Image (cartoon, helix red, strand yellow):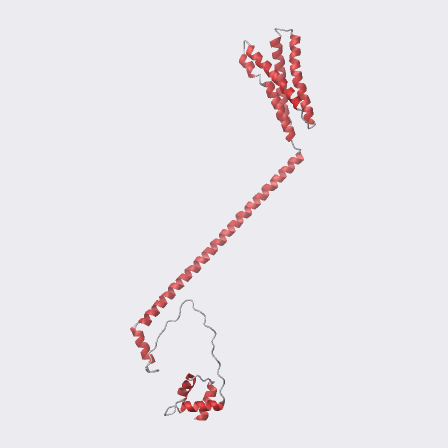
Length: 286
C-alpha cells in the first residue's frame, strides 16, 4: 500500500534532480567550465537527497529532527530558486522554465505526504479488526432500528384497536342513554297525564276506598346507599299471648273480623308471627 505514495515521490524527486542539474549546467556553463557547473548541480541535488535519506532513516526509527527537516527544505528552496532565476534570465521559453520551477518543492511535499501515510498506516490484522468492529456496530444499529420500528408498529396497532373498542363502547353507551332517556320521558309524560291518574284511581278505589294512588318514577342515576336498618327484632310471642291478641283483634269490630282482615290488622299493629302460627291461633280462638 505504501507504493501508492512512495512511487510518485521517487519519480518527482528524480525529475526535479535531473531538471536542476540540467538548468545549472546550462545556466552556469557559459560563465564557468561545465565540470564546475556539474559539481554545483550535483551539490544541490546531493544535499537535497542526503537530507531526504536522513529524514527517511529517522522516520523508520519513529523519530523526527526539525533541523534536518529545515535543511532539506532549504535545499529544495535553493533548487526551486535556481530554476526560477534561470526562467527569469532565459531569452527563450521563459514561461516553460518558470512552469517547472516548482518541481523540487512538489517532490519535497510528496515525501511529506508519504511520511504521514507511514505514521498512520496500520497492519492488515488491525484493519481487519477495525472492519469487524465497524460491521458489528452497523449490524447492532440495524437490529436496533428494526426492533424500534417493530415496537412502534405494534404499539400503533394496539392503540388503534383500543381506540376502536373505546369508540364502540361509547357508541353503545350513547345509544343506551338515548333509549333510557326516551323511556323516562315517556314514563314522565304518562305520569303527568290526566288519563293515568283516572285509571289508577279506578283501579285502587275498589280495593282501598278514599285512597288515590300516587305513581312515583323510580330513581334513575347515582343514589346514596341506605344505612343499615336499625329495626329491632320483636321477641317471639307465646301461643297464649298470640291467642289473646288474635281474639282481641277479631272482636274489635262487630261483626267479628275475617281471618284476612285480622291478619292485616295484626301485622299493621307491628306484631310478627309466622303464617302457620297465626292461622293456628285463629283456629283455636274461633
